[in-house]
Amino acid sequence: MFNTVLLLSFLLLAVSGSSPRPEIQPRRCKCTSNDACWPSPAQWNELSRTLSHPVFDVLPIGYHCHEPHYNAALCAVVQENSANSIWRSDQPGAEQSDNWEFTAGSRCGITANRTTPCGQGRVPAVGVNATTELDVQRALRFAYERNLKVHVKNTGHDFLGRGLGPGSLMIWTHHFRYQRFDAQFRYATGQWANFPVVTVGPGLQWVDTYAFAAEHNVVVAGGIGPLGSVGSGGGWPLGGGHNILSSHLGLGADNVVEIDLVLPDGRLVTANPHINTDLFWAARGGGGPNFGIATRIVYQAHPITPLYASFFEALTNGTTAYIALLDLFHTSLPALADAGWCGYYPFQSPSYFALMYLLPNGNTTYGNATLGTFIHAASKIPGVYIRTDVTTTYPNYQSWFVANILDPVHVIGFNYTAGAAAGLGVETASWLLPRSLFTNKSSAHSMSEAIAAMPAGIGQHVGGGVVSSKSTDFNALHPTWRKTLVDISTAGEWTDAFNATAIQAVRQGITDQMAPFRALTPGNEGGQYLNEPDLLVPDYTRANWGTHYERLLEIKRMYDPTNQLLVVQGVGATDWDDEQICPIY
Ligand SMILES: Cc1cc2nc3c(=O)[nH]c(=O)nc-3n(C[C@H](O)[C@H](O)[C@H](O)COP(=O)(O)OP(=O)(O)OC[C@H]3O[C@@H](n4cnc5c(N)ncnc54)[C@H](O)[C@@H]3O)c2cc1C
Ligand SMILES: *[C@@H]1O[C@H](CO)[C@@H](O)[C@H](O)[C@H]1NC(C)=O
Ligand SMILES: *[C@@H]1O[C@H](CO)[C@@H](O)[C@H](O)[C@H]1NC(C)=O
Ligand SMILES: *[C@@H]1O[C@H](CO)[C@@H](O)[C@H](O)[C@H]1NC(C)=O
Ligand SMILES: *[C@@H]1O[C@H](CO)[C@@H](O)[C@H](O)[C@H]1NC(C)=O
Ligand SMILES: *[C@@H]1O[C@H](CO)[C@@H](O)[C@H](O)[C@H]1NC(C)=O
Ligand SMILES: *[C@@H]1O[C@H](CO)[C@@H](O)[C@H](O)[C@H]1NC(C)=O
Ligand SMILES: *[C@@H]1O[C@H](CO)[C@@H](O)[C@H](O)[C@H]1NC(C)=O
Ligand SMILES: *[C@@H]1O[C@H](CO)[C@@H](O)[C@H](O)[C@H]1NC(C)=O
Image (cartoon, rainbow, N blue to C red; front, side):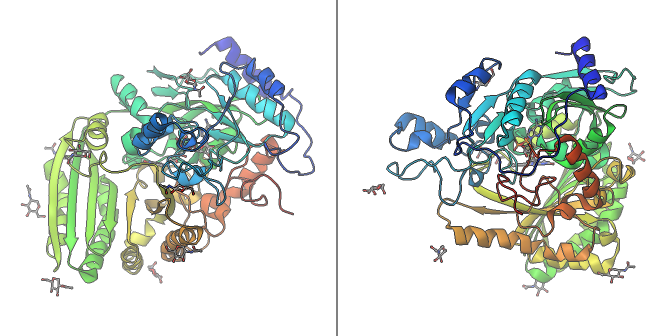
């Protein structure tokens, strides 16, 4: 897999820039499966002959639940597994949230009347099961030469369904799986680094990579998701990537030390701090797949530490106590962060607040002197009742992950294995909250009121610490990430029974819930987490990247002059239609 000669030849190709770069062309619509320009079966067969797996027709997962292909046994399998996050990630036509598989006029529901036809919706027409660099290069080159609409899908966790698109060619990287450990990393350009690394192919999932890292006695910052199902090397690192420990380990994009990308024209390049530095900057935070398709991601690995863990739940008898509790928490948060605490605080208004908090290398005395002070003060607020206040120590991150995310029995906090984890209509909204909002009593209180006006959500205290220690231009991430303590997010959900008007109301609702947070961070002071994006967020380029957008657009024009890789809320997608098929003039 790591053939040095091959790798060097790729590097040389990239440096010499010998591959012809097309002139920026007059902008035109992408070719989709509805168009005469779409390749013929014979042309697809020709492509298949060059790939490790033949191209395939991508079927909606409800295909066998509808006439004329109805098959009771196959449909039952789909219905039984639909809520399983890992199962969904293995289906080429599925996203984790099924709303992205459908359009208003075309859907293939798994519980719909079998006599209704199965509509292809946003499920791509043709798929490439890419398991090697050459597969990705050949498929992308094939699409580039024909101006085909392309989508890149890995596990399908994207909260804007960016892995799918109607009438497109899907390059599916989920089976591109390998991982390797190096006790001391050497860049492809020859320099030695003084840290260990874990290298992954894009399609692995964090459940695999965490176990692999633990076997080598290191920890890597990774995504979580139900059952650890988020992909290890696709959208998570490219869009930022946070973890319950990221204030100690850094964000995913901060931990990437080298990356291989297949560029829109099919060239494979390596980017690191020594070569292709513009791409290296842009890929780390610019969002997938705006700058190419990642085929190898190298993560810095960290020494394992024991984790002192707190699980705390409080109930309140109404809004007054709820806001008082939130005020106390918000104003306590900077000191808790400085003490080393990090984690999540889910809430349900106006009566439920929880803390799932970790203190690396912590102990009871220090934990009680810091978090204990908050809990003690919380217990004194009239109308606040503490339901749970437990602490435990895990020998390392892997044991925390197994006990809290995978194990249905020994969990001390939420039961992540209970309930539907996937297969519903879900959209998100999020906002990054700078530390300065927590140190100011007035804005801290405004945030409490904003939370009390949300039905439910989660504060993710994943910033500060080492995230704040990087300079704002370290990579393409929104500069506000460096000041952020908390990523607050919420989700809107719906079922097949919702009509278009009702869905739009849910969408608008979550956008509106973030409005007070946006108001507290005028200009580029705040932003959204682009992997928890809000479809209706005002001015998405500023929300995703702040002042970094102009440089990203410049780099995009250099490496993707024909806009081969466009996705909703992507770099360069502002003047394209909702599916980025045709430019809007
Ligand atoms: C249930 C759930 C839990 C989550 N938990 C977390 C969490 O704990 N922390 C966190 O930070 N985020 C979390 N996320 C958000 C997650 O980080 C993003 O959805 C992320 O983009 C998923 O990447 P993926 O490759 O697994 O998914 P996909 O949906 O397959 O891909 C996501 C995006 O990346 C692009 N892409 C995929 N593969 C590649 C590739 N090889 N090269 C280039 N581009 C590619 C796709 O085109 C798409 O635009 C969660 C999401 C869900 C649904
Ligand atoms: C399914 O649709 C057919 C035709 O419209 C109708 O006759 C039948 O009653 C429906 N079945 C169910 C279970 O709704
Ligand atoms: C994709 O490739 C993997 C690995 O070879 C294989 O297990 C899987 O069945 C393939 N899927 C499709 C749809 O071709
Ligand atoms: C507890 O943790 C604090 C902070 O890290 C440390 O200063 C102290 O020595 C630790 N105490 C014990 C008994 O380990
Ligand atoms: C924790 O601190 C509180 C005061 O903040 C004190 O009342 C309590 O006894 C301490 N508990 C332990 C176990 O040290
Ligand atoms: C909540 O409880 C407090 C303390 O008992 C009490 O003073 C307050 O009136 C209660 N509020 C409501 C809304 O019941
Ligand atoms: C968690 O949920 C699973 C699935 O519903 C269940 O089997 C398990 O008993 C639950 N665990 C606890 C501790 O409640
Ligand atoms: C605190 O925040 C408020 C707005 O909520 C603002 O008017 C005030 O100037 C801030 N104070 C400081 C010291 O920054
Ligand atoms: C959509 O659903 C809502 C809520 O169920 C209902 O009030 C409304 O009339 C429906 N609208 C249409 C156009 O069917």
